[in-house]
Image (cartoon, rainbow, N blue to C red; front, side):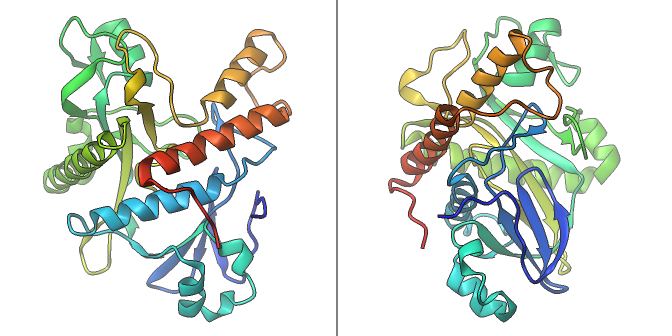
Length: 305
C-alpha cells in the first residue's frame, strides 16, 4: 500500500484536517480520505505511519457495520470498487482510495465532541488529581489514575479549530445545542459506547474512553459521523495488563509520544512545529500498534485490496 501524506482527487476538497481530507461529491454525499499523517501534541509529524489511514477507516467501517441496527450513521461504503461505482469520476484513482476512503451521507455537524469516559485517564485524571472535579463538577473521593468509572461519565467538549478541545459541563452543552438535542446525543453516546465496550471486552480490549461526533441529515435524522472507536479517537488498553493506580499501555501512537517526550525533556524539541525527524524504529513501532489494534478488535489481519 502506497504511503499517503496528502490526497489529490478530482473532487472539490472542502477540508483538510490533521489526518483526513474531506471532498464534496455532491449535495448529499462526502468522501473522507484518511491519510497516513500522524499528529502528537497537536503537531503533525513529517513522516507518515504505514497503514494508519487504512486502520482508521476500516476500524470505523467495522464499527458502523456492528452498530447499524442501533444507531443511524453516515457511512455509505468504505470499499474502493463500490465507491468508484457510485462516483465514476474517481475511476483511475483506485490506489488512493483502497482501504482509506469512505463515502458518506452529508449532514450538519453538531459543534460538540461527545466524550464518554469509562476510566479516569488523560486530561480527566489530571483535573481530578488537582481538584477532584471533571469540567468543574465534583467526582467521588478516593479515585486513582485509571480507576473504572461506573457508570461511565458523559463529558462533552468543545471542538477546537486549533489547539486542544476544552471539557465543558452538560449544562453548557444544553446552552449551545438545547436540552432536547443534548439529551439525545448523550443517549446515543451511552448506547454506542456500551455496545463498543462490551464487544471490545470480549476481545481482550478495554475502551477506556472515546469521543463521538454527530450530525443532522437533511431528513432531520441524527447521524453518527466521522471516526468511531479507533485508536485515534479512543484509549484502547489490553485487558490482561490492566492495573489501576498507574498509566496503562495502549494500542495507539504511544511509542511516538514516548519518543517525543524524551526529545522534549532532553531539550531537542520545544513542542512546536517543525517536529523532529522520527527514527525508522519509532515509525515501525507505531504502525505495528495500529495494526495490532485492528487485529485484536476484528479478529483478522488488515488486508487492503
